[in-house]
Length: 261
Length: 301
Image (tube, rainbow over all chains, first blue to last red; front, side, top):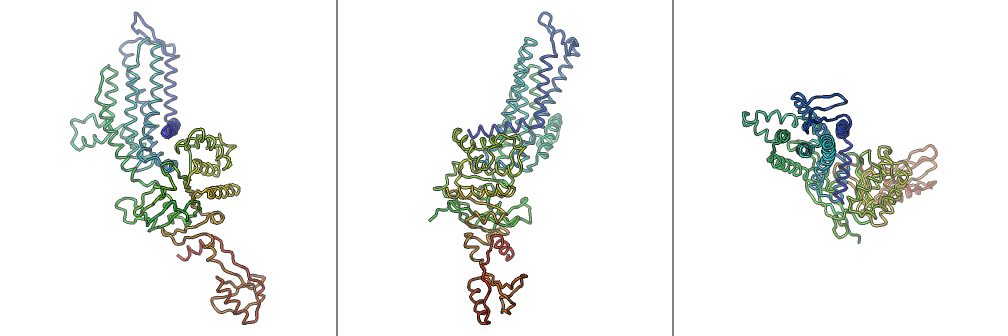
């Protein structure tokens, strides 16, 4: 019951973040557009054209490329909002006056940090899970094709990135306790890591060691885009897990000794 | 004899910004104190005296540099969340209701749902928020948030209560409410440690006071004993009388006043006056307040 109440509090906090509210609005808008403004036309079971807001588009190569770009764009928008909505949460948690009250209620410190971390990740899992399910059902009704595999990979990839970045934000926040610092660091890491990892093989040893300190976002992104081409990647969950384990251990070690002033 | 509930042994706390900090701040210096069951103890001191650090060390929110805080496990079952705490700057998310906050914190204290619902109604009534139980916290005034803070601190029937500035933002009725509430809790055996700057309030409720200054305990004792030790008298005289030191007379616009600091001094002053053939108009016991005592103690430092 103790855990559940902490989860409920965290859930409320996450869904009241402006970026998360915007994310829910964007996802609902996407769903409504798909439901009411998009019609598919088939010929002998083959998709030949799509009607968007009453305008017909043939499914030629240009349309397929456009659709691919659109999916990537939406993926980036969703991920950006998720990062914005969750990056500052840990800094707020470490400065929350209720934190001292939770500790006086007999919660061990490591327990609080882990519960909060899992609550944030579970909340995002629930939000993204509902979106993925709704999109899969809508697309199934529209096209008769099953897109579950695609949306499960969207869900898992976004969760993996959020889990990685929230762990980074926990470590930054335990030292600096400022949501803005945490947000800036997480955004820099989110954008810089994929850029640096392009030249991973050719870079100097120092850059490669530095890259090991950053969360493996590009690996997750690659794994996600591989699923778009029906390929699968099973090694990234292990890398993600190890990275989170390491970063959270550092956060816990420091928080265990930290003065709550 | 009353059993101690917390014993502090040679507690020191030094704050450093980082490991290279060459000017560390000593917030507590070798502080040793005991707190007993059912007493209300006021921890007093100017800003930065170490009051909040002392409370936070007892709550294990701040790790002492040296020394120990011992809990009497026979009296206090720490695993059952038997501590209530109102932090100095109590805040809750604006989208919560008073009932919601208490419900969450009650569950975190390990309370059963059925017991919790009854208890929430009771504490909301006690702090005067029963008619605003379902209002959002963003609609609350500062005083109402403090009342909510007090409600959460006493919700789970704690045996030990720490209150940091509990009456600061309260209106006079709120202060009376807190005063009565703390007296009732103390009568039920709850140990209460209060940090406050409102000395007139503290004087009315506390059994014992601890005055901290620059991290040191400079005075400690029962309020009655502390104030009695400071007692004195005013001798009212109809005309100016030459008195030997340390006595002196001053005119207050109506009569001449001679101030003495103790019963012994009073006897000596009366002897001097008798020797001069003067009878005082009146002998008025001086009422020393906790505020007087506090200011005098700090000034002595």
